[in-house]
Length: 111
Image (cartoon, rainbow, N blue to C red; front, side):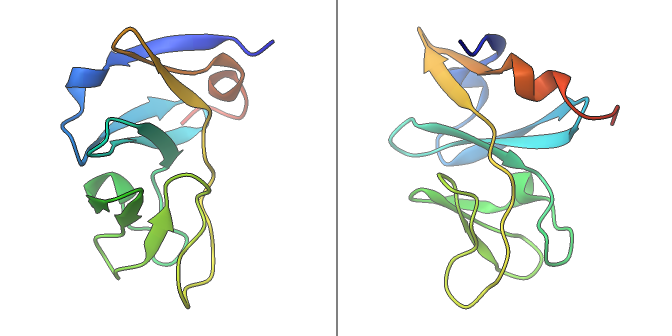
Protein backbone atom coordinates (compact mmCIF):
# COMPACT_ATOMS: atom_id res chain seq x y z
CA UNK A 1 0.00 0.00 0.00
CA UNK A 2 1.34 3.40 -0.99
CA UNK A 3 1.81 5.89 1.82
CA UNK A 4 1.34 9.60 1.17
CA UNK A 5 2.79 12.69 2.85
CA UNK A 6 0.82 15.93 3.33
CA UNK A 7 2.75 18.73 1.62
CA UNK A 8 0.37 21.66 1.08
CA UNK A 9 -3.14 22.99 1.01
CA UNK A 10 -4.97 23.01 -2.33
CA UNK A 11 -5.43 26.75 -1.75
CA UNK A 12 -1.62 27.19 -1.71
CA UNK A 13 -1.68 26.79 -5.51
CA UNK A 14 -3.78 29.19 -7.57
CA UNK A 15 -6.09 27.71 -10.20
CA UNK A 16 -4.08 27.24 -13.42
CA UNK A 17 -0.92 27.85 -11.43
CA UNK A 18 2.03 25.98 -9.98
CA UNK A 19 4.27 25.76 -6.94
CA UNK A 20 7.72 24.27 -6.51
CA UNK A 21 8.71 21.76 -3.85
CA UNK A 22 12.21 20.47 -3.18
CA UNK A 23 12.64 16.76 -2.54
CA UNK A 24 15.58 14.45 -1.94
CA UNK A 25 15.25 13.52 -5.63
CA UNK A 26 15.20 17.07 -7.05
CA UNK A 27 12.62 19.78 -7.64
CA UNK A 28 9.01 18.89 -8.32
CA UNK A 29 6.40 21.21 -9.83
CA UNK A 30 2.88 20.93 -8.43
CA UNK A 31 0.18 22.09 -10.85
CA UNK A 32 -3.46 22.92 -10.17
CA UNK A 33 -5.80 22.99 -13.14
CA UNK A 34 -8.96 25.07 -13.58
CA UNK A 35 -11.02 21.99 -12.61
CA UNK A 36 -9.00 21.69 -9.33
CA UNK A 37 -7.05 18.59 -10.30
CA UNK A 38 -3.47 18.46 -9.01
CA UNK A 39 -0.50 16.98 -10.86
CA UNK A 40 3.19 16.67 -9.98
CA UNK A 41 6.03 16.57 -12.53
CA UNK A 42 9.78 16.97 -12.44
CA UNK A 43 10.40 20.70 -12.71
CA UNK A 44 13.04 20.53 -15.45
CA UNK A 45 12.14 20.47 -19.16
CA UNK A 46 14.29 17.87 -20.98
CA UNK A 47 14.73 20.21 -23.96
CA UNK A 48 16.60 23.17 -22.47
CA UNK A 49 16.12 22.71 -18.71
CA UNK A 50 13.35 25.26 -18.39
CA UNK A 51 11.53 25.44 -15.03
CA UNK A 52 8.10 23.96 -15.76
CA UNK A 53 6.77 25.46 -12.52
CA UNK A 54 7.08 28.85 -14.29
CA UNK A 55 5.18 27.65 -17.36
CA UNK A 56 1.62 28.33 -18.47
CA UNK A 57 -1.02 25.82 -17.32
CA UNK A 58 -3.83 25.29 -19.82
CA UNK A 59 -6.30 22.44 -19.63
CA UNK A 60 -4.30 19.44 -18.39
CA UNK A 61 -1.08 20.68 -19.98
CA UNK A 62 1.81 22.99 -19.16
CA UNK A 63 3.91 24.94 -21.65
CA UNK A 64 7.62 25.34 -20.89
CA UNK A 65 8.51 29.02 -20.42
CA UNK A 66 11.75 28.75 -22.44
CA UNK A 67 10.91 27.13 -25.77
CA UNK A 68 7.15 26.40 -25.74
CA UNK A 69 7.30 22.62 -25.40
CA UNK A 70 3.90 21.40 -24.17
CA UNK A 71 3.67 18.57 -21.61
CA UNK A 72 0.68 16.45 -20.68
CA UNK A 73 0.23 16.78 -16.90
CA UNK A 74 -1.20 13.26 -16.66
CA UNK A 75 1.60 11.39 -18.45
CA UNK A 76 4.52 13.83 -18.50
CA UNK A 77 4.90 13.29 -22.27
CA UNK A 78 5.65 16.15 -24.65
CA UNK A 79 2.82 16.89 -27.09
CA UNK A 80 2.97 17.31 -30.86
CA UNK A 81 6.28 17.09 -32.71
CA UNK A 82 8.34 17.57 -29.53
CA UNK A 83 10.22 14.52 -28.26
CA UNK A 84 10.71 13.78 -24.58
CA UNK A 85 8.98 13.42 -21.28
CA UNK A 86 9.32 14.32 -17.63
CA UNK A 87 8.67 12.06 -14.68
CA UNK A 88 5.29 12.24 -13.00
CA UNK A 89 4.88 11.89 -9.24
CA UNK A 90 1.94 10.16 -7.51
CA UNK A 91 -0.18 12.88 -5.92
CA UNK A 92 -3.73 13.19 -4.65
CA UNK A 93 -6.01 15.62 -2.84
CA UNK A 94 -7.90 14.72 0.33
CA UNK A 95 -10.04 17.16 2.31
CA UNK A 96 -8.37 20.13 0.66
CA UNK A 97 -4.81 18.88 1.33
CA UNK A 98 -2.26 17.84 -1.30
CA UNK A 99 -0.52 14.54 -0.63
CA UNK A 100 2.49 13.10 -2.49
CA UNK A 101 3.79 9.54 -2.44
CA UNK A 102 6.17 9.02 0.51
CA UNK A 103 8.09 6.38 -1.47
CA UNK A 104 8.74 8.89 -4.24
CA UNK A 105 10.05 11.44 -1.75
CA UNK A 106 12.45 8.99 -0.10
CA UNK A 107 14.16 7.58 -3.22
CA UNK A 108 17.19 9.09 -4.89
CA UNK A 109 19.91 11.40 -3.68
CA UNK A 110 19.80 14.74 -1.89
CA UNK A 111 18.95 17.77 -4.01
